[in-house]
Image (cartoon, rainbow, N blue to C red; front, side, top):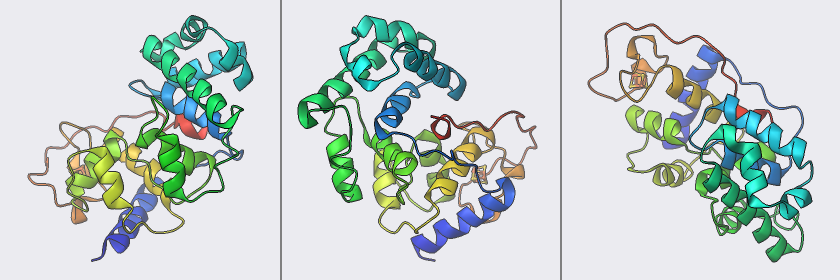
Length: 237
Ligand code: SF4
């Protein structure tokens, strides 16, 4: 089966199991999305969302973030961890935007093709392919599926790609990615990776992709699925 059809098959099975994920009714500002994605690294949705809210409460506009001292930003985002690195990345981002475009906005590039936007965004310090592709999916509604550690692990276990890093998985996936399913595919795969296809001891017996997954040996011991929220930070910015 071709890659495009296999992705659609997985998407259909995940929707049958989890439903169609809710989307933010308001399209977020692309710069807010970049900041939110930087804050989301190496922490959970709850803490990164709280850090985002703290930051926006103290500095409501991006211009205020631009003028703020790095240490003041670090104070507001401490709950998300890695305060030094993340505050530096945020400062470098807003400074880089100002230097390159004369304002803290992506208006100059949002009408470009996906690959051009990815190239532009990843040219900023601290913005990797995952962060840039989150902007394309969540803020610009493009047919792009960001690949984080969960998406990378599950897709390689299933066997639709065979790649060593999330960035290589991203490139392989987008050689033939179907139109119109990126948000549900990405969001449901992350949920699968957090709840079922976990890094160790995947709960294969409860997995909706069991029949089409090529991972061997599957874990056939039954296990209790975690309960809780499927809150996704990037749909709440
Ligand atoms: S069957 Fe097991 S290894 Fe395959 S996707 Fe499901 S949980 Fe992951």
